[in-house]
Image (tube, rainbow, N blue to C red; front, side, top):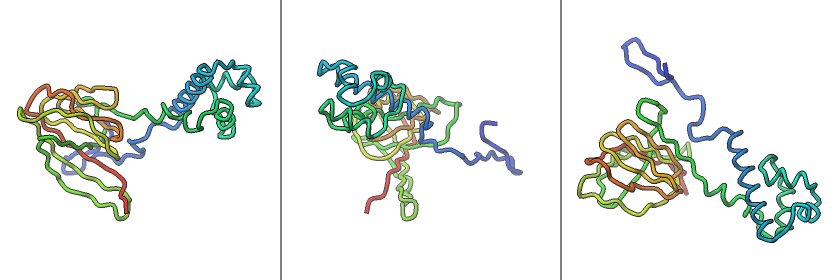
Length: 221
């Protein structure tokens, strides 16, 4: 019944989620990280005209192990990564560069149900703060908004800030950018994403436009 149960009054109740909707499965995330590291090692090696055999000799690794790392088929230890960084004369953090540039966005079509909403906006857009949940015990601040865009509203350059957002579309249509992707959003759709990637309305398709937006971010003291 899609995670819903009915109480005696006939109202539907949403079953409590047992997993974090913000997370990617640990196995998938680890595999993406391995591939990202492998691509960086391969790119740095090629830039310096170093062969796999040369890099293996410079690091004390086997040729097979270097190949597995470059192909994303193994998870190298921190010691191994440091050896590779030293041999290639690059910072250790450079191996994580492309992985850190990736940001998660989950686009849920109307009727396909996940259960959360978040987002924030500006630039001649009408938005009403619906309340704020302080972070005294949880360490997280939550701010829900109702966003309204009309013919007088403008699109604007994408912006970035800390936190997690979800947009839930109520009325109208918009092409919404997140990172290098643009999502066509219609009533009933949601877009759940990490807000430190560039994001914002790119094209106002059908007006007026209304959507719920909830931003959550860590409290700072």
